[in-house]
Image (tube, rainbow, N blue to C red; front, top):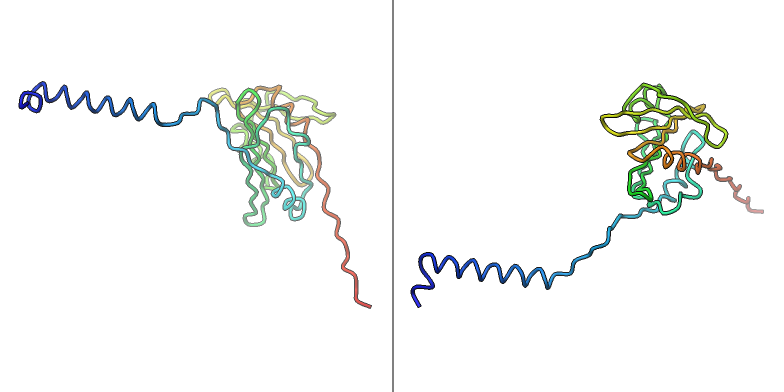
Length: 184
């Protein structure tokens, strides 16, 4: 018995026991072969922005088919309101809608697009959008400067995917204030 607990044979037996344990663990542990992309509900951010943002809010209606909204973050820092809404596209690329009233608008757009160089312009849903491309980051951006805010649609998604997101954007109405009835 001593020859299996010492020396080379002991090492082989110990390694065999460990490998059997690992194989059993792998068979017993459940494994998922499907992709799991977290989905977020951004309707609360839209409702808060509609109420609080000093500019008209644009949101996708409807979200392009088979896209998954996976991040939403609205901030108000030092009076600057910014909203970032991220998506995994149907092709599993990244696209993001960013809107802000940060000044200067051109500087904000350049920072979000990671470039200040326009590569062209395109008409989407009757509106003119500036195209920007940063090759080393494989980042495409569509920029629209509006009165009071800047809208940027950006990401590693292809131009047609970014165009689909930009064309789905609808201006969200401000909530109507209902006056509280006065007691008689």
